[in-house]
Image (tube, rainbow, N blue to C red; front, side):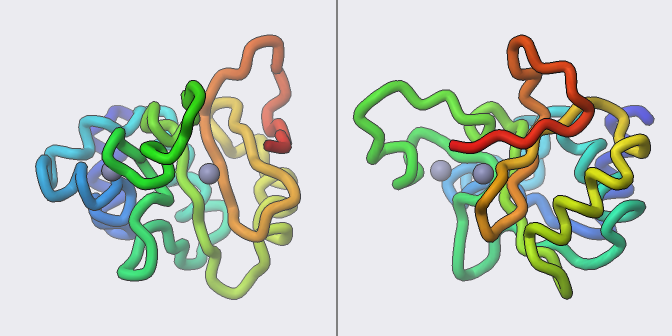
Length: 148
Ligand SMILES: [Zn+2]
Ligand SMILES: [Zn+2]
């Protein structure tokens, strides 16, 4: 799938303001799609549309740093050591999945890993669904569970 097709399809499920921080959205608006990695967007589409098939909430009025984070985000500004999270690379999102727990969502994704176009990572043991497409050095698993 090419990038334009992926973004057009994703528009049925997400606005860009849900996937980037409020700082990024207020400066770049719709152009902020450009900061999100193509592989991340394609995996998000497959997970939302084909694997989970229920609504997924990233940013909302209650939270604005669950997708792309910038240097103005509190979560980033507050760090006093190097911070190279997949969230600042445009390769990650934290989601609440409608009608299922984060663990149930992770299990369903793992059971359907063959549908994913590339390897992904899931954060284990947290009550939100974090997934990213960081190609972690030395890891070849289709779905790799990491712990912070
Ligand atoms: Zn920000
Ligand atoms: Zn996360």
